[in-house]
Image (cartoon, rainbow, N blue to C red; front, side, top):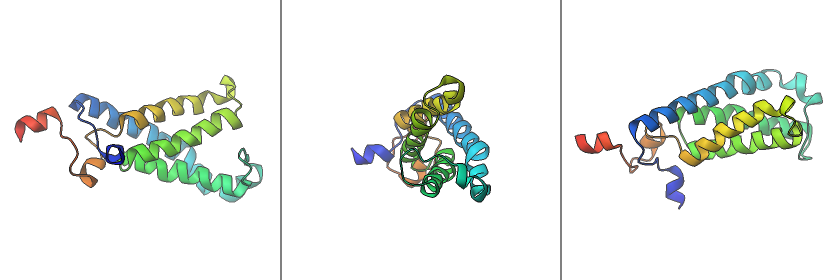
Length: 148
């Protein structure tokens, strides 16, 4: 079961291409539109940052930055894809349910990110990810099997 967490599935090459697009789209959008901004303005936003889990504003902001910067980077390159997606699912779940109070007017963006991250959590990074390099016993695509 633990091995399945890291092993890319035996998907078609088109499915793996779609997963690559989704990883890059959701990972880089979160990184550049949210994570790096929070990191760059840490000291300016810390006093107004929400504390939905009661950990303190600073701890909450650090956890969100870790998810939105490190998690997004890992997701985009496809390394530990399911773990990165799980971290971002938690981040967006908290943002949607506790910070934005599920209001579609303010919570629509976290809800859409959540959908993308849940999809990647289920599907994994696909064959065009660093997971296939880091975990070489992974299944190969049907095309690669025919060639090899």
